[in-house]
Image (cartoon, rainbow, N blue to C red; front, side, top):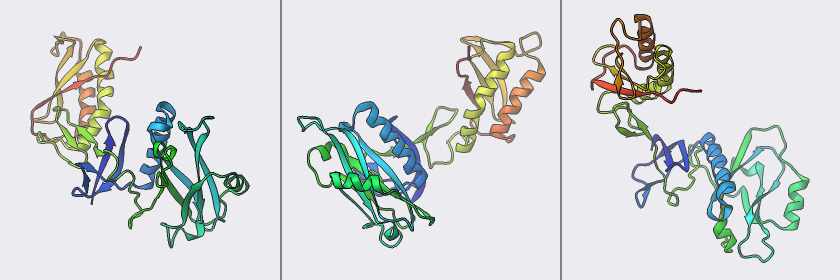
Length: 289
């Protein structure tokens, strides 16, 4: 198992996870998520369901409780059924035996039909207690639930490390990327680019670029990008306004203090040691109006 980040195109993610590089489904990854990532995934799937419809979206739900809580019932509702004349709302009921979570997580929660009795039970009792916080994670495939499948809603059981295998052997998870200033993309768990820049440096530089742009635009509001040299301590060697190169010598828009301030921001991100690979372009985000 390696630590990395995964996503599904621009739809879901990126999320921190662990995974086995050899455990793939048609080439796709099978990630195991920590609880924080599972919560983020839940928020994103619910947002997608509201935007695109429950009939084409799986949703992930995180139910909160405590280890000494009484049993509870939770009703989860989706969109209208496509197979019902009155378009009744699709729903399931999740029954949780909180006191059983620690010793038998795989059987502590069950998914059943959202009957009137289940709805009444859900209104009557909420999770209580003062014990350790616990969660139950539910994966609902609404399209298949609407077709009558009895496996369309399932409980996601944590693995031995307490991680949740959500969408493995089912969803098209792939590695999230980080992008080097040289233009190369790397899988998230790869710490270095072939040009010598590390992932941490690239991420720090990404955060620093807007600040560098602000500094350089004080004297040249039209500045759009800069070229930095890294064979020595990183420094700015060229600034351009569109296709026009700005003069960095005496008589140009910049003084030594301004360029020195911008260089200091770069070195705070990249460090002061030389980086193999030569020059890199920094493109500034559009100026705020």
